[in-house]
Image (spheres, rainbow, N blue to C red):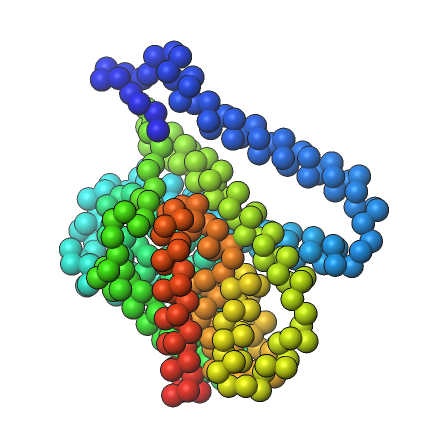
Length: 334
């Protein structure tokens, strides 16, 4: 955060000290990228182990799949910060959090994007004065019930409109329930509301600084989450899953945990769920509801954006409600 003097920009040494962290982070990112490229050229011909190659393929696939949506989310977050007056959100959303939560959940149905995009957008909403409970509801709903996800689910499950409806209803219910619980029990010290970088220029300069700040901040956690997900995908044998597919409650829990570990983008997870033919429709629904709300890369992004204390409370709450609601909806409607 750059401190400004009352009459203008900060003085020389102070300004240089304030700008140093951003420049250092950019230099470090560039050096790391160059190191990775060099290692790829030098070491790749000598890496033949199938597990290592599989890890690299999954890691790159997760990062490449998520990166466009992360960029979209960062750009949208920066646009909200730079171009939308803070009072706009107080006019659009009801003042009472209990009413603002379902409104924010419904808003998630119209914004295409995956979970990586929703995190910086939710952070920007909080920074502009939106109640955390409403912003968190949007964070959960947007990647789970947006039009692209619904169309992908319909294509992956042809002739099964019940699965599409069940995914939409269960996901929206979970997002709203989490928002209400957070509005009721959440405490201010549990969540670190992102601070926007200060700027001395116009709106476009604010937009540029916000993009750089959010991308450098969230991009690192995306890499950490992608690496963890790739490791799990390689280490866990697929034979462990098939043995549990026939056990009702266990199959639901297994696919819920698998959704967390695999960290598949919400636009693609329906095709993976459809391929798990040994599992029941209820277990597949749990996979589809949990995945866009709780996965390794999303946990890493949330920790970096809102703090460790937040993630330690928000992630278990979301997971338990997602499994419970999807199980109930699956048993009743599927």
